[in-house]
Image 1 (tube, one colour):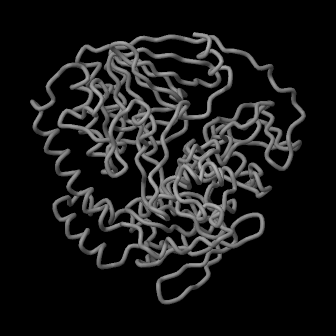
Image 2 (image 1 turned 45 degrees about the vertical axis):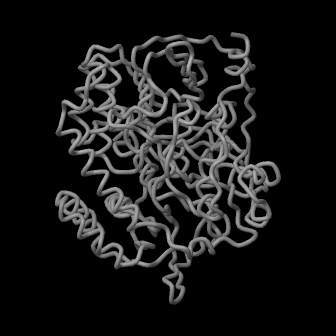
Image 3 (image 1 turned 90 degrees about the vertical axis):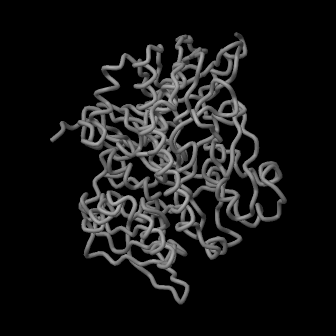
Amino acid sequence: MRESVRLTVDGRAVLAEAGVTVAAALWNAGVLGLRRSVGGEARGVLCAMGICYECRVGIDGVPHRRACMELVADGMVIGTGAAAPDVPRPASRVPERVSVEADVAVIGAGPAGVAAACRAAESGARTLLLDDAAASGGQIHRRLPGQPPPEAARSWLERLERSGAQRIAGATVAEARREGEGFVLLADCGGAALAVTARRVILATGARELFLPFPGWTLPGVLGAGGAQALAKGGASLAGRIAVVAGSGPLLLAVAAHLAKAGAEVALVAEQAPLGALAIFGSALALAPGKLLEAARYRAAFSDTPFRTGAWIAEARGTDRVERVVVEDGSGRFEIPCDLAAVAHGLVPNTELARLLGCGTESGAVRVEAQQETTVPGVFAAGETCGVAGIDVAIAEGEIAGLAAAGRDASAAPPLLRARARGRSLARRMARAFRPRAELRRLARPDTVVCRCEDARLASIAACGAAREAKLAARAGMGPCQGRVCAPALEFLFGWDSDTVRPPARPVPLGHLAREETT
């Protein structure tokens, strides 16, 4: 049992378990509405991974802090959208910049990034691993600081400690560019500025959830599927919650199992893909029996819960939070009471930094050649940023990229090449099986919010002819998440490609930009 810390939330005293995230502490205290949107709507946690910026609160007088990325501290003063704490804001300043040099800079400390950093450092390269989380392991092995890593990650994390690679936690890379014979990365480290100069760069930036809008999806208590799991891993209590898990992809099984083990009552798991598509994909898993066993273990964890294929959430209803969802199965609709809806339709590769560097993309993923090098010499990519394919592929590609970036020939490691080929083949079948159905395009109504940051609604966006026009006329994609949530949805709804990416790729303190202008 962790010790308790004292917080002040909107002027009232709250006890929280030490070491949990601010988002989890507020959830446990019954505070689900964390901010007010542009239109005055209550908004809560969505991704719980630092991507969507929906959980912004004021912390100790500093506004717009991501509650899912901050850990509680004794005496912390938190203000949500309902009430702002009367605490003086720190004076604006141009922060001092810390400069670091490396042979190989790896961005992202998930399975691919950790494997890449290990291989590069073990090959003699000065290796720097940057990640915006407090602990290595990525979203799949997300945990609170001080908690032991899961067994599946332990050997790699121990190997990382021995490798000699330097790791900087809490570093959000906002800009990447070529400079001379190498590259410069600019990052925000909790308000401090960090500049990294590296000869080679490995992008292991992972993926984020695909959110498709439907009426009520902005209600507090409606989270991403992985977002609900990440919130729980951050210390949120789910005991007694009634949850509906819906969307598409194998992640639904893992999330439902996690929620059930955490004490939630999982009322329904709804997979939008039809049974026939799942059967075809299941037959392909005969070549990967380990995956079948894993799926069976997940299903056993919520064996009393109905699992419906060809079904999806059409609407979420409630006043200041979700109270029930409407589920559609193509032949009719029915309601299920719940106070937690975990909904996502697969994953989308994070390619913003790759595009900043000029790397080519294909089908929404970074394009790489046999050694995991991108179309930009000296820039490598591995894992989900090259296309969603799972942890085994991520590790294999990370190893290949780490070796190649350190000047080694990864083609001399046939087991890695075979693992990559098998995994990528299975991933292509998975993408076909779980492709979002056309009916999902018709869920959003004219007044449904599509861009959550700017409260841009479907009617105003549909009147535009392209992503750029939607930005200019309806402000879609102009908010803090910079289109990470709405751009994939707009591509699905209208076929619009994402607009060009510009630095900073993530919101950073204004002082960082001022410093950049003066150098």
